[in-house]
Amino acid sequence: MDFATFLIQLLNSVQYGLLLFMLAAGLTLIFGIMGVVNLAHGSFYMLGAYLGYSLSAAFDNLAWALGVGTLLAVAFGFALEWLLFRHFYHRDHLDQVLLTFGLIYIFEELRSIVWGDEVHGVAIPALLDGSLPLTDTLSYPIYRLFMSGICLVIAAGLYLLISKTRLGMKIRAGAFNRDMAESLGVNIKLIHATVFALGVGLAAVAGMVAAPVSSVYPNMGASVLIMCFVVVVIGGIGSVRGALIAALLVGLVDTFGKVLLPSMASMLVYMLMAAVLLWKPEGLFKQ
Amino acid sequence: MSAPKAHTEMLPRSVQFALALGLAALLLFPVAGSDFYVQMVTRMMIMAIFAMSLDLLQGVTGLVSLGHAAYFGVAGYALAFVTPADAPVSLWWSLPLAVAGSGLVALVIGFFVVRTHGIYFIMVTMAFAQMVFYLFFDNKALGGSDGIYINFRPDASIFGWLPFDLEGRKTFYYVTLVLVVAVYALLRRLLWSPLGRALAGIRINEHRMRAMGFGTRGYKLTAFTVAGALAGLAGYLWGAQTGYVNPELMGFHMSAHAIMMVILGGMGNFAGAIVGAFVFEYLLHVFKDMTKHWQLLMGGFIVLVVVVAPRGLLGLFGQSRAPVGPTTMPPPQERPHG
Image 1 (spheres, each protein chain N blue to C red):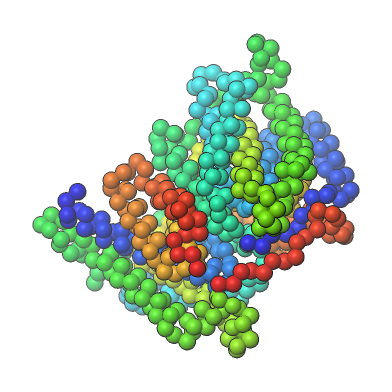
Image 2: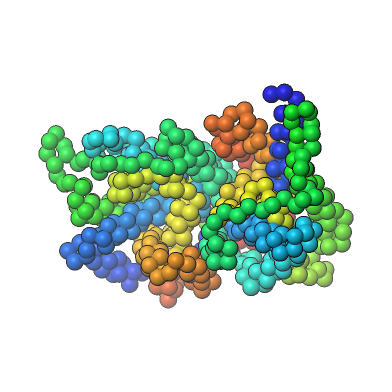
């Protein structure tokens, strides 16, 4: 592998890792703060991708599509939390598994009714179409750099939101000791709803920006969900920092595995997870 | 993770009576039912074995495995590998081989997963099952995504004498029924053995069990391996009945279906798993018949069950009786903060 190929694979793995981080961050926040196991998280990613497909066709403008799509997804998150999830914070994990599995079925069917079962491609916006030459023979698509950029901006925003803002302080207080935070006047119900909607929004944005590269297709949420689980388990449940590092690690192993060991590529990530668990059964950054 | 709810380890009289009635109905069913329904009920019984095997983990020990289908699938594939293209394979060695194979895979994976707790356990079992899924899905040598055909059902002859012929639909039905009853009896026996009591103790309070000197990891690994082997029994039967195995057998949906069957019927007493498997498979059949949007109905039904019947269908029977002796529920555990 020469240097240019190596660089391309490295950029690809960072891009994949950052995308996984956006998904895993929502999953781990929702679990860490509310104690909810959300198997339907992959469906939010799928929802984002399909929204991106419809909105980019409707607006023909990336910024508008992304903005409106994010708002719609966040609103959907608030509604879902209010309708269903808030009743399940104190229930057994098993009930949550069951509830969210039922939701997977429902979302999958609604997706099929609204958008049909065929695979849709999403065009890369003209502004970002093209590639950046790395050497005389190799070049890197601009859109993938843009994806990494968006994910980085969101990761940074998430970090600032949680560790530097008043809302973030309340979120952390609620996660640390719910009753204490509540008696100090933190509106825990609103915090929970916000975190949930934030998680849905993150997953949907991930789906929207990934759509031009991965195209949109039925059941696209399932494989992503399982990868998220791997990331969250490696990073340590509830740890956003752990999710970031684990996501990048998974991105590296997966991308380079596909190049260097194609026959075992899809298993390597799980082997990584098993190795981490042998070493640290509760993940690298257990909270 | 808080201890799972709703254990009626002691079955109320009404449930025992209903089970006896159900058994009588199953014994008589092939006399009246058409071939199609005989096959359908056979499949329900196979799923009942699968669900009971998971209940040993989920209901008895409090370990929710979201990857139980891996062991189900491994045994089905084992049958596919040992069956020659032009002749049946002997039941008497292929069945033990497949069951032992599933048990062995469960032992190896169990070694990793019993180190984890609660939600980690759910996610890790799922991830390992995915690993097994991809091993078969990505390898042409193992059948790939297309799966493998099993041209012949296993042959039950002993030195030329044929006690029963599995190619017959009704014979296969009765063999499966015998196995359902045998697995149920075995698990009920195990539930009240020292091992079963230790597993129930782990569900209620693992720390206390360890403080009392129980090597809880060893017990959990034992449960995991036995559950894997019994799931293998179901997988073997599935492969023999359908004559076809594919990676979907080990997939996420299959694992999740098993969890739902167990919860739907009621956990921890194995009767619930049987009831859950029958109801779930039946509903799947009815919904698929009714509309092409069956997933909407199934999803809605699942959500409805979690919301209104958190103790499962058998839980509806048990509610009037106060729990007795070892079935007493532990006090609700506080969710650890932070």
